[in-house]
Length: 196
Length: 277
Image (spheres, chains in turn blue, brown):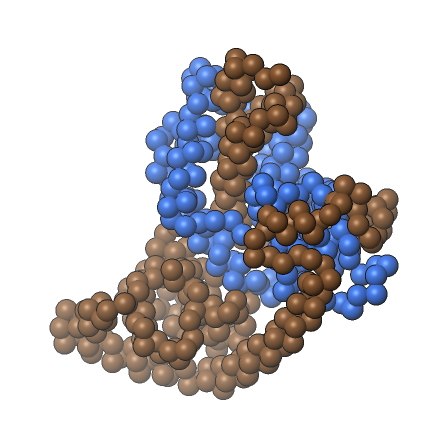
């Protein structure tokens, strides 16, 4: 709520695409709502890939500041905001991991006991349902495809590193990952999991 | 000019590109190619949705709350940002047309959105008032809900004892019944429900672990986006029956672990949930 004389609206009522427009025009409330909706996912992914709670928080901060500064970079025609934010979280996390010399010192996630205030149960339920279908789709992949995807996505390895780890030619890794993603996409389309 | 060789080489890299598993020089080359190649761009967009879903699955497994103070750090950053605070962004240009044309049902004409929003706000207030009323009922009902659930549990058990799950068989024989699986974040099935069009529901199986007696499982229906307490399942759920108003059409069922007396709004992430498709 900055230079306009809009009364505070109910950002919780708006869809993601509307909120991104509102981020550009109305400011902080809209961004806060998008943070509430998507920051847990953005943070969890960054934690998983970087393995460090502090670094992961820096990634979240960067991702949301970038959305604030350049909301026009999100194009709803090209996918959901969730995917857009997660793609940025992933790519920033991977950059951090790759620039870090002591990659092997990756530590387990810090346990945190902060109080849970007001869970967004419906989103949780949705995420659970999607997670369930994603894990099933991943588990249903041929073993080699699954291993390659997990090493690349969750651990942030390049395909060349994945090839070394799996003792497979680079070309094989490229095509396994590509095929695996396609297979997952059609499995998820069948089970009705869609981003929103 | 994109040559076929270029295209084929780039195409092979699209999967690993989507997962950020390419080197920076390859990444830059692919970005350049995408500008002129709608086909590859479509594949990348599709792949990013799948990657996003992989990311969402971590979030659930992680399940930790947001660190306090993180939003404050971001908010401080906003103040320092050089961005113009209001008015159309350069480059965002005619966002109404852009977003409106692509987001389908989402009306994003800002002025119109304002009117819609005010109207929605009024509706939302009515809904919230209704939810609050339900919550009050839930508070009053909670004390009895436990007893009620136990009674029904006993009945269900009797029915089940009198034949091979007679009640469940009867439910399963009802036309248009729906079976709802409640799964944990890691995909394990923790309970199975049968829902009838009349609003009657049965928990027909549960493998939810026994809780200390200071805690209880609580069952929620997600109705119009809000969790409504159905009742307490106790610390050692076995079987249960319940009835929802037939006008209520929940989009999902969820179970949380709560203090023994139950709560009016969920205080934790669900341990299991399932959509009513």
